[in-house]
Amino acid sequence: MPSTASAPVATTPGCCPLDHGTFLDAPAARSCAIHQPNLLPRLSTLAKLYAADVWVILDDVQFARRDYQHRARLAVLDHPEQHQWLSLETHLPYGRATLIRDARLADPARAARRLSQLPAQHYQLSDYWPLLQAVLEPAVHAVTETGRTAAAAEATTRALLNLLRWHGSIVRSGDLSASSDRSMRLADLTAAVNAGTYLCGTGGLRYLDHGPFEERQLNICAFRPPSASEKLWTAASKVSALWALAAYGPTVVAAAFNDLLAET
Image (cartoon, rainbow, N blue to C red; front, side):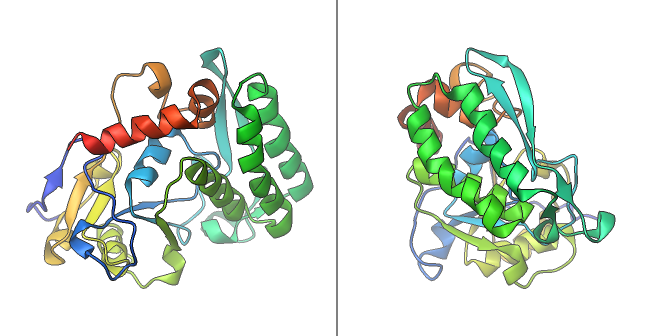
């Protein structure tokens, strides 16, 4: 039975302070986000990663085709309510049991072309497109160099975080020791990177057992981006953050993310 006790939970958007040091410094102040690698992540996902000091890439769980490791919705620049899927065809060598880190691109050359061409088709009229194109170029190369879906997704997320001048750390869950139980695993990973706070999305709160966090004296921060779907937050939980970056520019997006952190 899930524990009925509750670890401390903050519900203010962007509730965790930034402290981009080594894992040995100020663990109580350090926050971590644990999230699967997403291709050109949604704005809500990118905001959560930006708010964290450490991103633990959850790469040793089963690949799910309904998720976002291999696909992203690209919104039309002037009509964000319209969107198109950008999907990278993925082969699962072990069937449904394939872990995210083991998923392979079916045709890396074709995937690289799609990752290069579809964003250009959607956003080349943006004043910010030359900058976006430049930061995405290494991600396009990662597609052909690795042939791995997770590597491509990670590279696109790194590119967008770098564009926003995020200075956090990135580790992979497969390199850390953790329980197989869902909530215990998250608590173990939080402790493994010496973080004192786990940033939890609204979806994760529905199943999270607070007990393992209490046992390790860890905090839980319920990360909630603005609920009002307007301006750059339009369809933030649905479409790739590329739309907001192309429509408003990296400076405005970074300022919006920092405003979330300042609301504490």
